[in-house]
Length: 229
Ligand code: 5RP
Image (cartoon, rainbow, N blue to C red; front, side):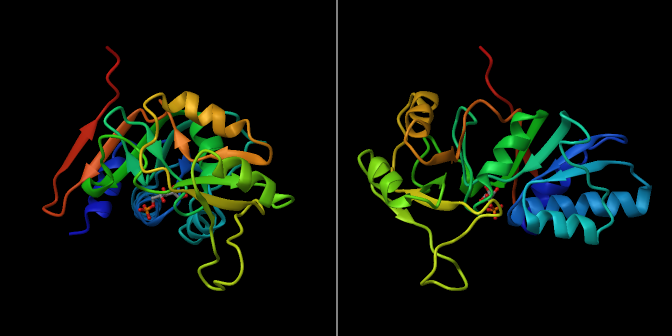
């Protein structure tokens, strides 16, 4: 069994009738959107979704999940999304798929942020996965130089046209920072990076996850919640 799918289906058990849902992005979140679609079709579950990427939007539409936007509500009950890394404190690196800006807007507007992953995403401290940073295209070289002063970054390339840059749904570029070890003061580091000119958003999600569901190939799941002590 696919561990990501196991986590996703478990997460969708938290979805209740009438909820406004944030729909995440990436291969794990896709399983969750499919599971929500099945419940809409089979149980008549009534939910409304706000997708975090064009891909998730298109899938939700295909599956008949009603969609709304922030013109309709400012508050999301529950968001289900994946992550690239999950630390022991449940801080996250996200943005491997380039959707970090919309994902963070949606996460910040959610009462609950449920993260789904396989155990390969769990780590002691963040940074082995290159940290995605969304930047504006104009003067990107200036922004890159400013960020390279912290640690070397690479301009992400398009998967389909490798001689062109990857462009996000919001027409931004992505720099991947090869930090290896994000400083323990994660929130301070995030703020420091965000102060650089041209930076729109950083793929560090600090203190945002309210629950992490880890799926395993034998079909079981474990759930982690933030330590409030
Ligand atoms: C996209 C993301 C994804 O949640 C993250 O990259 C995990 O992806 P996957 O579920 O495919 O492993 O942040 O921007």
